[in-house]
Image (cartoon, rainbow, N blue to C red; front, side):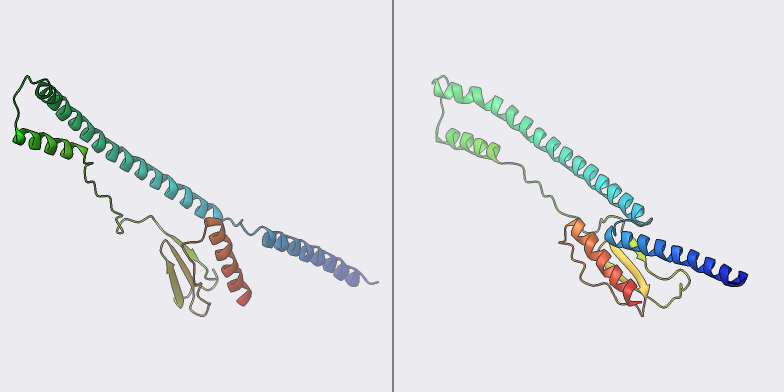
Length: 190
């Protein structure tokens, strides 16, 4: 065997090893599709969004509890004032008539009511969304298509199939699997 033939065989051996390593890595990635360096950005966005929602919910609950506590305090003060009046009337220490009975009944009915507190979702406020850019880094042409799904926008070449039907009713793990499967189909398609 000549020197060049031996060198070619050696190079082929290295290429075969590289090929096998790449195939093994690819199979490993396909069996555990949850890792990509960009996944940390999504994970961080998710955690920060959850924390902001939790902090907002805590603040909203505290505000509501404060209002309810103020209402309870005001109700107690009114009851404390009404208690001796009713006691005196019951013990015949104070004369009362039908108008007094109606007045006291109205006060009690009013005190039984919870305050009307309207809580609405403000659709104008939203969380920061994510954008996934699926364009090939070597081909960042302006010929692109943007799909938007509430908090998620996906940028693709106009020739790439559009991701459809990302249903917000999916559980997050189902959504991860669903998005991954659609992205995988896009990669296979191209």
